[in-house]
Image (cartoon, rainbow, N blue to C red):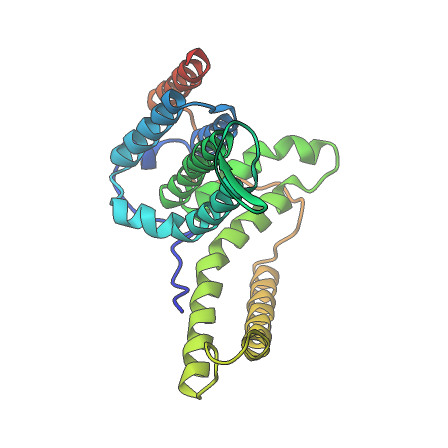
Length: 263
């Protein structure tokens, strides 16, 4: 049972995508994620995948790293596609057996809806692979700055989001270490009935919860040691500035959305 996840891990490369302003990358990823819900046919799907493959190539990220990042989520999407294949009843019936049936509408939904979600997952994975946690924090901090003006903790929300991404691979690695330790002690993790397997997972969850609380306590002590104060005005060592490449990336994004609408 492998939990070696690369979700949330930054991959350092010297590429045009890595050099973009983090605000542009976050905004572009959000636009692509939202735009996938307007994809309804094959031509739009091909455009979406062509866009994502072009971005991955421009970021100089090995396809293997991208696949490793999205594999757990894609598995869930494929399971949902199977449910759509048998439960959607629109269109002409192609096969039926009792309450289960496959129709032209269910095939369309299972294929198009699932593949378009993979585009959104690719956009999110590329954002995390090409943007450091600090840059993500700065980008979300800038995006949530208007919330601070109306009394909401915009900076704190951005920091919590960044910390969440930072600790995903850490918690996954610790979960794998706990699983390995339990396996070496002869814990029947993959044996017996479903009830026994669920019962065997309980010690793992307790140990993982204790480890997470330990990390949270250490993080709070580190913030206190650095005199962190919520809501305090802060400067940046590397201020964010829009450059020509950033404006060009926004134009490409506009062209993508326009082509999606035309198709």
